[in-house]
Length: 584
Image (tube, helix red, strand yellow):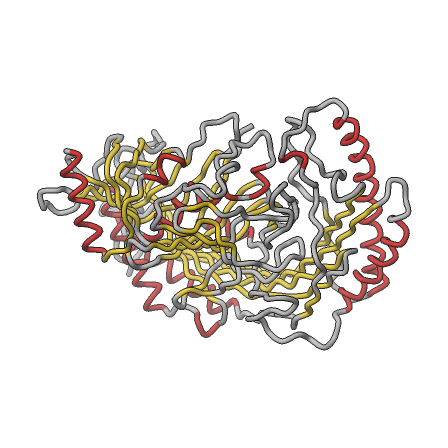
């Protein structure tokens, strides 16, 4: 089965904002607001019904050994504009209930994977009322609990039958679920109050600025604001209530080169409080940069497939590590026989140059004053987020873990994550790369030129910006990755100016590519985006300095055969007839 995991920062991801919160230490968050003195009515209803269900279903045949209730209460504001006009403006609020009833025991339960059959990653749930009416809420929770318990009981029968006829791998014999200590935290409810009218005017002005360029075919600006409060109780004793607010502005412009290749430019701003929102000066400056890059890319020559030295600036390097390393360090992949299991047996071994270390730290909300999108307080299984050292000076130390344990890693480290409607699995949060072989940008560029000369190459590549990337981790497919550059330059060893080019994607295989890194820059850069994989789309950050790779391969980018529009945009057509008083 193909396992493709896509990291993107594009506008479509804004509709899939998942839970993200502050940090936690012990049973009290170290950087979160103070606890609330009152227990919300919703949490009271969940706890009351949990106690009733556990008392009854734990004695059923088969018995439920674990029950969990999660309710996500989301307020979502969205304002979009295109080409100088308003597209949409909305303010919505909804609650979503997810019930988990595990039947069997921690070692073997109804979720156990059946042989080569791909598991179901979706998690059934139901909308619940917005009113804090405890009897009504309990009734809705009761109905969903009954439905999930019946489905789990049927699934356990199939699991026990399959156990009699199928061979188990070593990691497949690990328990299906880990025992974790209960945690209690109830923070204050978070809310947003957004006046959409000013944002409706802003998205009109922002996208109108793009339309001044004849190279722009389409432009979109989207403002989103999310206030999410998550409540969770389980039969082990966990009781949580916490929330976070997140604001985002996204700018997207489309063009088409004369040969039909689609040209896309994207930018985003993220902030946590209204006072930190970007001002018009910063936004219009970014718009002008995007227009200039779009016009230059339209005219830029294509570059042929190439293998040689390459320099990835920080954002591009961050996506490189997310795709090449991060997904293969997710714990659940180590126990699935259908996975490539690139690093499964390599704990304690060197997999990176000794000057590189990597951690995943969802407890960090910002870095250098910039928001980290992969920050959260508790994961979606009620386990506190943890700072996990994955690679220490090139040596692999451990994996990112949900409550799906491995033989030698029996507990979660707070990385069980999911989009609403999906089953949590181990996922990245804030992947942070550090280096002890860091040099200045100018020194790194000089090292690139020296490598080009040593290898007798006509040029090296500078990857300056990216759209995202994806990777295959399934055993039935090549263990390959692909990173999608947006801005690429040829760097010549004879001192000629850098040449902007287009039409390439970075490709490779992980074990080889990771060993080709020879030096890094001295300033980390941040990529905030959304990663789509088995448990849906979750917000993530990747942080890395620029990296110099002695040999990297690029292939031709997939392109369209459609030609650019026959006529120029109406406002830029000298032959167009304009109404009185309007200028072309």
